[in-house]
Length: 244
Image (cartoon, rainbow, N blue to C red):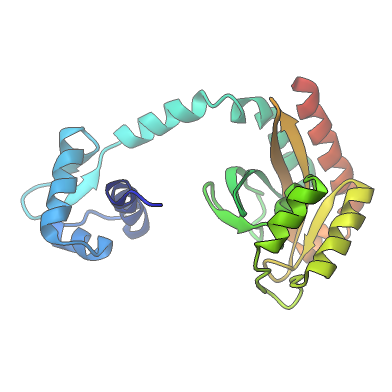
């Protein structure tokens, strides 16, 4: 369930991030697909709280840096991300690929942090992005960590949507993949969610909660280094669990 005002507020900031320029009231209302009167009330509320400001007459509205300051303070004091940062940034440097830290949210996973590869050709994603369980490496890792009764219930209520020709879309095929992955101790996604992309993942326990760690990159780079990346991934997982 979405709270309309909260959703509109987030949409407003995302609109400025997308357009990368000031917007006047009618332009902003058009982007948000809301009446100008509703947009005015939202903007005035944010202006009074110091989150947006008005440029010279008729030149538009733009966010202040207050939201950045608030976000930085939140990020600096995140009890989980602060603890895993050394191991995950080291994993990114060792593998040269994008590292993602995630959490299961219902029938999806959500990306909590992303450590971008320095390569120009890399897996591009962002914090807050959602991925399906059945066709992402971290999603499979969460499925593989479930007890049989929970897994059966989850798969029974899931539609295994096809995203690429390689996506596993039958319960039998997915179950076989999970069984093999559980046996070897790590999970993978070979072009199942994005063509020409390989993802490797494991789960890690922190404070009694499960999180996902994944390495993702283009097939041509990932495949030759697969075993080395798996070794580095397991080492990072063990380092984080030792902290716990």
